[in-house]
Length: 134
Image 1: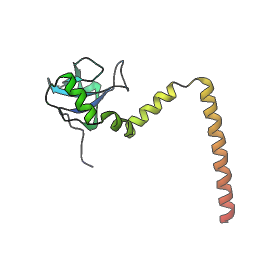
Image 2: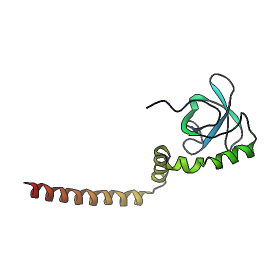
Image 3: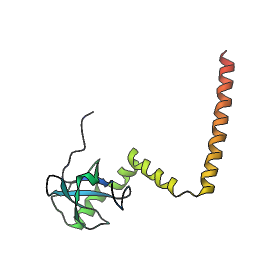
Image 4: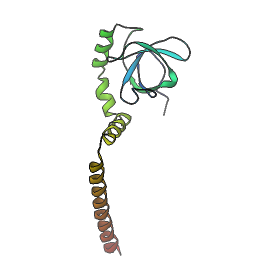
């Protein structure tokens, strides 16, 4: 499996450290120094960010170096970044994590009961299969 997540202009990345961890993805605009990139997203102000705080994704959009905000938004919509992210296994995992974090105590209790019920059904079916096999 070849390496696909190169640091390049238009590469979509996710912030892995700080206040907006996990939710926001942004695009690399320009490489300012060896360890910093100029990044921008539709919902944030263009700024420099250290590569240590970014996680590169497989998604890449076709943009010029340092485009205007409206061009960036149009390129992200044309590339269908949001749907690609939500369909990726990484994006689905983060959606599930957010959903679980929003559960209250009673919801967690109901999930526990459902897991117990499911495991008992699986155990009973496995016992039937073992009995019929022997």
